[in-house]
Length: 315
Image (cartoon, rainbow, N blue to C red; front, side):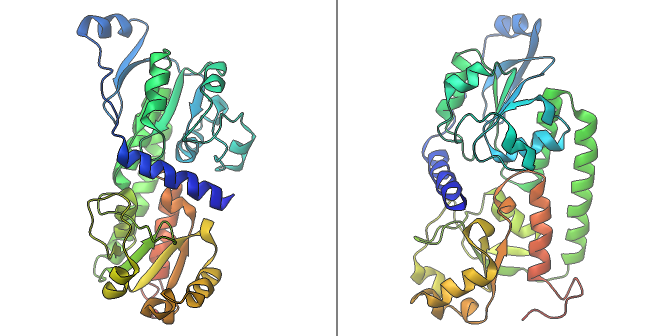
């Protein structure tokens, strides 16, 4: 399932780059005033405007990170449907599924009679939100590009579903952990890493993605400086830069397996980080703008800065 999920996310990333959201659903002032009588007139993080019921009781999630957020806000009982790849927390797997994030069943979504559908600009196709909005189903799309914006998205979702108290407690806890980590790493030099979203062909992360920002919170920075969200560097480019570490996600394998595979590859085996065994596997939560991302950031910081956390000098 890891490979399939990675492939679907890969397709979604390309779609998010190739197709810009269409903020063309703004209503006239009289329409907004009329809608406000029966609901709330809101604008999501991609510029789409819509009316959302004041009392949201039935929620459909179109992405794993959004499902995780709904549960973290204590609203799992109101989640009436999610995707085939929503697995955090485990009980999310028991919800009715509406397909994969890129091509969900519109009929299935409509049949669930949602008060609100949650989407994300990082993997969902914009056309899905456009179509559902035309059917009269409100779709709120989040699109955080930094870790702190992810925290803001949590607040926005909480406000829509009436979970502000839960959001405040969650955000306070997550922000405190991030601030504590920042204080621990403030005097440490940044570790230069190659974050591999995809191995063959190599695909990494651009400077303006939430993953690149998450790396910075972990005391690392990508060796690639790119305005593209998902740059595909040549191996020659990677070899010329020579990262200190290679970081991969757990749905590609584990650290031991990843290192063995790279050492068996005729190109990658000559990279200094591979020779030194500096290959780190992080949880696939690192690719999700959701509360679990903070856990993944802390884990990576411990791997890259063991001397700061009492593990002795890095090897």
